[in-house]
Length: 554
Image 1 (cartoon, one colour):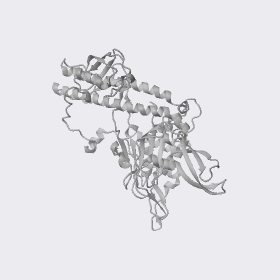
Image 2 (cartoon, one colour):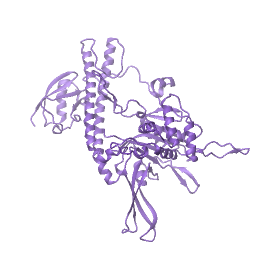
Image 3 (tube, rainbow, N blue to C red):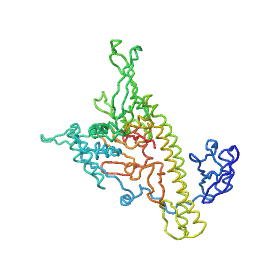
Image 4 (cartoon, one colour):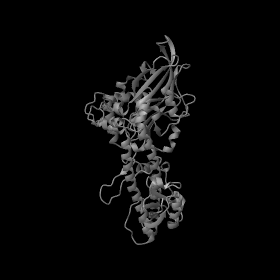
């Protein structure tokens, strides 16, 4: 290819350069360094589809004559560290935390009701559920009506809520939860209510929510119920006799509300535990052999719901002690989960195109996010240093273009840095719109019409119910919910331009998003980096029920 005359824009200045498409991207970066003084290792060059890499091939990028490339990077010494030390959340007292955080409310423990509290909090990670509950004009199921009222009360206060009405109805609908622990005095029953299983509570509440009408369908047909739309998978089970090859396989389908993750002596990862539960050996009467025979049961999902619940089977019945015991083994779970291996071949073919493209797009977005974070940090550093020189107040708000107070080089550099932040935000908006349009075209039409079904097969972890303790009939349950579930500013777009001259849409640049920890009425921030402590391996809190939300094709 013939050399091209192009332009580069850096710090508000435009430079002319000759681009040789036959050379790798590193050669172009070296030429930019000669013009701008920005070291190659600190330089970011924005090109079509992301950033220019050292080994990028220009024929894949397709540069054009006269094209302008934006260059990001600072020449000279690195930005100075902040003079004031950073204050971490764990170092703040309660007053400072109250000002810094707007925490969601907790639920009071009414006597061994942590199993219920954790279930209610985890289900708040399903915003569509609250929409459906509020839209439902007639619900026969009292537990569903009570849950709607409880969520409304929780949304109107900043203090912990006492869920007495919901608890009373739960015990009426499911008498099991009204059982009392042993104990009497003077012929009177002095025992309190017994501890219950949070997974059983999750299942019972989910069944009660089948009375909640679903959300409208694109075709206007009868939507069915909410649980059927958003929380129900359809499992195809094939049973084949190992001892009679000529015996036809039997196929059945059933609706499932959760996946089981079996835990044995070799289980280290959630995915392998799920596969162990899906592929099993069973013994049953063989019609062709006329006796008991071993069969292989292979189960795969032919429908993936928007919300996928996974039950870590940590409690098992021990014959030698005639009681349930907890499996303490450490089992790692992912925060992002690709469920394609759990599906039938037909569903996998429907999900595959959008699934693969979304994974590629997310890698590109991660690279662009790094560029935005570094650009914003540079702009804030220049703003702070300029304010210090001018003797004014230091504002660490989002970098925005401002009218310079003078014509100094510092003012110009600060303004250009803020403009770079804005330009990256504009380009991100355009990239997201293009990516969304591309992904929408890849979504299978049947999946698009199936309201509440996953369209990508890729999932994000949004809620966890944990159990703490060594015994199955005691211990303590807590819930952990991803912070974005409660935030007004959702990823990826957190702000929209509403008028001329306002800033464009901005995007979350955080890599590890924090979580909320719900320990009954005590609510605190839980760093994402500590999620691995919930893998198990001891008597401390271990993941018991996990809730995954399907990633949208956007």
